[in-house]
Image (cartoon, rainbow, N blue to C red; front, side):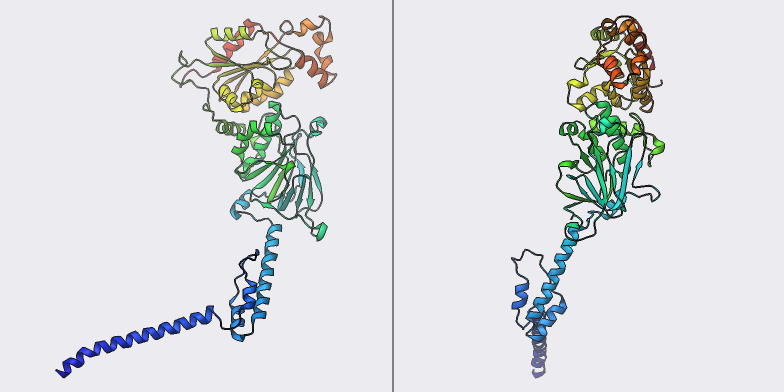
Length: 507
């Protein structure tokens, strides 16, 4: 019996000993934690150094500072000094961050930044019509003063970011930008501090010059912007000088296709914008065109037109019938570009032209681009058409929306203007994969024959007017002239256009 009682008590004693050991371990652990986080010495100085209401960044004291305070018992002054030093360093780092560009994504910045060719000057001629400046490094841009500071520059450069560099009248409406070496002094001579940072490449261009005329909108600004910006894959920010809100609202969809960043009215901007690289001035290749051999990624105007279809939601890439062949359900559509609201070059027999085209089997539409501010709507109308006809003028720029395989018919006014028609629309059409036909107005089809005697140089010797300069030529043959094409001759042209269209899936 005694041995059985002793056996029962043994586990109880072992359990009590284990409980006591656990309690002792807990007390030791609590003591260590208290020694680490609640030192015995005076903490008045540390508390003063880390006030919750202090607007500066909260400083976490280092282990060395806590050890000093705990070891002495009188180390409050030393801890406060350490805290003050830490706060001072944080404030210096904060100021340094304000001055130095802070890319949001290092990889994106590396991809977007320009690789500068040391053999080229910062600003150089990219074509007969354009100069472009490129720089990389610490870039700080001040919009209101049209000034760009770059730490890698050794001298000052100036540029007007618009593709008409020899046209004094156009450039008189384009602000000049200056690229300068980044100051390294103090006080008034110090470099401006960044107020906003971006990992994108800054791209400065102007919507001054001749913008507002659709032809110049595309050939001077939009296509050169595409040529220059495409290589950055969207990591580019457009900083627009001579900004016009009505103009930008017309083309904002295009800029949104080329960039992931907001477009900035840079002349009215008060920020100091910082970037890893900058481009000033777009690159021009040719009228309404892109030279793939001159682009780093081999893009062409076909790629530009593809981008336009995405920007404006255009459905037709090619001018093919919806079924096996053209039929009553989907006749080829012909668009007459009207100029009733314009000065000069209007069709005097527009209604008769439409009736004649309808008799050939065309579904005829008449549209005046100057009568609408909705670019998307007019672009969709043009894209729905297979043939577009109009007198030489800015309205024909809408050919950029025609599907591939469509036909452009340019009516060339009287006055030996074939060279002008060729440079502006005939040559660009091939790159756009659009067929081209030309109808040249004869003397008996122009209203000039009603304004001048038959022996007047305007009618007898147009080249004499050409020699008087562009203003005389424009006033006489573009502004004062309307046309009345012969329906018989024009019918033959429309029949040629009809034959050019694809007539089935196998053709």
